[in-house]
Image: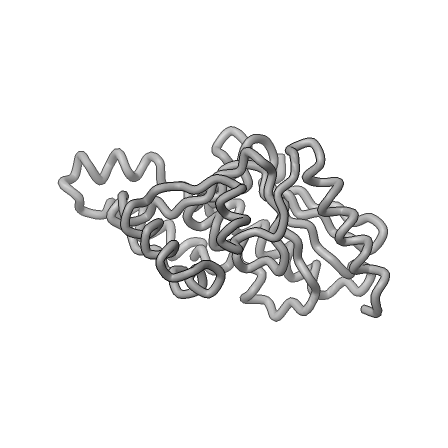
Length: 208
């Protein structure tokens, strides 16, 4: 089963993270597949707009380190070797479309948890549409890990909101995300993909 689903239809590419049982956490395998898809999306002139979403109840819960968090507590906070080798095998930056010189617009359809590295990927998209149940947060400080995208995050939300989320690790809901400018629209879950598709279709009416 692919870790990322990729479909092209009527000038629109649908890119779906496909690890619903892990809330679409970024594993090395997923990152490797996603990096190849970004290159194809960039190079295929038949697609003009991308819709980026996640399968199941999450957009993306960030880097897949659940097992390593348990190991950290057992090892007294020392990083397990797997964390280090993980980053060497498939560095997380390869998951971002910003690293592939993509000039086509990307719409993030955020259907649930959008946390840590998942929030980073949403920020790298041009337009963000959130389902009403979506949740946004930066849990890295609670895990003793750096959040490398904080400068990017503060570009989209007021500094005070960014600082609060970083310091407290509190999450915000979709409506609050809309109020502070983090997302463009909030819609019901059953209208999310349709709304993103309609916006992509309007974009495709313009010149490429």
